Amino acid sequence: MMQASTDIKKKERRFLPEDFEVTTWDKLEPYLKNLSERPLRSKDELENWLSDVSELDAVVSEDACWRQIKMTCDTENTALRDAFNYFYTDIQPHIQPYSDQINKKLIACGYTKELDQKKYFTYLRSVKKSIDLFREENIPLLSELSVMQQQYGGIVGKMTVEVEGKEYTLQQASKFLENHDRSLRESVYRKINERRIQDKDILDELFTQLVHKRHQVALNAGFRNFRDYTFVEKGRFDYTKEDCFNFHEGVKEYVLPLLNLINRKKRAKLGLDTLRPWDTEAEPKGIEPLRPFSDGKELLQKTISCFEKLRPFFAGCLLKMNELHHLDLDSRKGKAPGGYNMPLAESGAPFIFMNAAGQMHDVTTMVHEGGHAIHSFLAHPLELSAFKEYPIEMAEVASMSMELFTMDYWDSFFDNAADLERAKEHQLERVISVMPWIATIDKFQHWIYENPFHTVEERTANWMKILSEFSSIEIDFSGLENFRWSAWQRQLHLFEVPFYYIEYGIAQLGAIGLWKQFKENKENALDNYMKALSLGNTKTLPELYKTAGIQFNFSPAYIKELMEFVHGEMKA
Image (tube, rainbow, N blue to C red):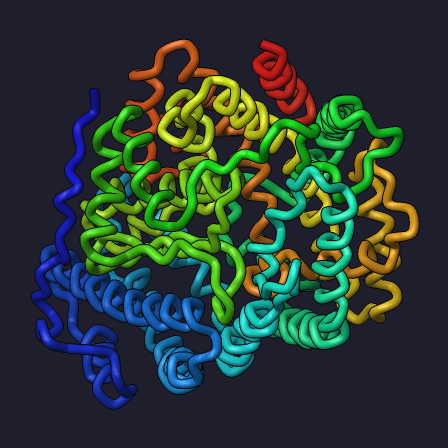
């Protein structure tokens, strides 16, 4: 069994004073000036300089992360919002020219070729990419985008509805979609969507502005569109847009039929003539909805118990984060939507943010973010901050694999075998049902940025066309078109992290591959998982997948193979 420690410690500083904090540009600039001007007269001096660059990167990154964490935990606190905005308008823009100078200094240094090229390959490749993309004229645009993107969380975080005389966030209200009372389910479904529609025009306008600014960033950097720019900026060295298009087709051909099958079974189980969108989470009368926990505290305790059974190191990561108060799990008004694991580059132990409301999908979110957290712990001992900045695709393998690994230990959440079986079935249905949505969002983004000056009407028409391609024919949406037209607005990635979505599909396939391994040899699969995550960003994406014992492959043929495996497990 692979061993690892959760005794994570903040790295001792040797370049910056221990009490240094990122407060103003004037205080930060001298350190960047030192790094950009320092002579490098030997390999040893180069390696020491790289260590100092890494230290400063970690300190600045962690400061920015804490500003975002605090703001998303309380979107109505103007001081926290101002602190976030200050960093991205008054500090970050000044850092970027120095970062470019430092990158160029590294590549131009005669001693760089004496570094271990195998060890530094992915880092140097990323540095060269950053040099190629850097444009002075993009600094203010990227700063504006960083601030504008966060407006989405503020808008959506204020959305609430009233159900049975009580106010709920949209996340909290969604639990009523599991209720036996079909009329109540429909009422809540309509209230949630009507509340979203109230801010449709505001979000449409925000999104239009974001698209135009992103397109200008791409033009400034010499690209035809933001899609092509982003593929380079995100370091997608190992796959192309054509691979994404093949993924879309594979999902349509081999996943959508399984989703239709799942929905036919749901309709039959509920004894309905027609399955409506407010029916998909419901259980037949007499079967209570799954309630795996009551609040965030219980969710954490039960997840720690579950992780302990799987591998004690995993539980230790959550215990350490709890000790450090690096968790905010409950949904509440004024909190930004969604969930994330925020790596903290200097101190090491990450922060988990989510909006738990007592439902089964909250368990999935918690173990998902727990997988990300484990990745942060395993990569933290790596020498340089850049080595820890693992590819997004591998990050999602870490989280999605944990959703599947933990299923056999969900007795921590459920007292009886019947509920446990229902929970597992729910998870496997989710593995299938999420794939068409991933394809929908990704294909939509390709259209958006290939046609950046589209009208809202054109956007809606193309969204509906793409949504229809990947929607289950077993669900009747008649009369609900006004809700469907703007359904894309609920996906925060479109606003906050553009083109971050295909990674979930690529990673889901990797996670299924690891789970297949796990079913054959649990300890070997967990060792391979931990070995791959421990490599951080020191290997290419195909090499990381190979270390994990899985294929870097998202062709239609491979999708078919893995879907047949999942379907077999569901039947079993």
